[in-house]
Length: 406
Image (cartoon, rainbow, N blue to C red; front, side, top):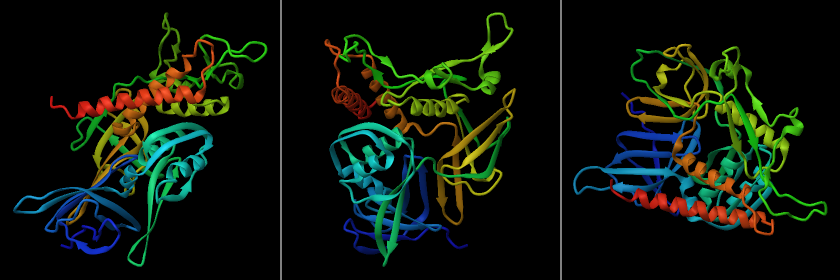
């Protein structure tokens, strides 16, 4: 039987062709939305750290960089490679103050010190962020998070080598292909994970902190109120999902009517009520259903092959009443051997590796909305710098913990 393992074109770190890197056995490709994109395989050859692997995935060229090898005295070399986006870890941004910028403007700024260009950038509105003493890959992830997009590397090949490297920033990767998945009580080969986050059927939305001023426009000391959108939302500072209330709400005191389960979300850098309202509605769409993921073989899906980001209609018949959810393919692991075996994670929540750090940054960032100086003046730049330093310290502490043995 013919092998389905893709051909790996082998280049050194200077993009000079070495030859073909022979794979022995299976090759595993793992990819996540805005996250992991790796290759793992064994070979008789021993590539050097930083060597580049170019391969054709269907009609799409992919490039990976060798970051780790395990080389026993006898036997095969185990190779671990990451998407060539990892080279941005070596590009440094001293400071980029992105105030009221479009996604394209922000993307242009963070890619400036790199050799990557923009292949496509969706219209994602205006937002703001401060990039301070960070590598370009962190900055790229930050732009994707703040402006609400999903990153895809675009590799073009000409004359047998990489001709260009570019970034595609879509509002969402993937599409609706009619994929459906039904989860039953006795289903084998499937793992369901229900996360602990609460389900909310209504959300209050808050934006940037607004300073108090006197009649002459001078700043006054005290706490700052947060931006709301009640003036453009019928006087309500929250958005609600009436259909979700019937499923995920609760009874009122005398059990005569179902009421909403309220939550809140803060977008500390948003200064326009219209954008705040739109972001809160988007957040409600995610918060109004349980955070759950299903890890399944692609063969268990009804429909075409699943690509990363594709939308999947999920019916969970193991629950009473049954859950009907809209999920996405957030992770895909393909094993190339004599055939291609694909296993996907479909869920209503994205992978948590980068999201956990992002959530920490967001929580700390909200502090800037509640604190002012003694004289009531607190510049945005100053507050952002304090927040970024706090977040950096917290993340450094997490990195130190990662090195400990428990």
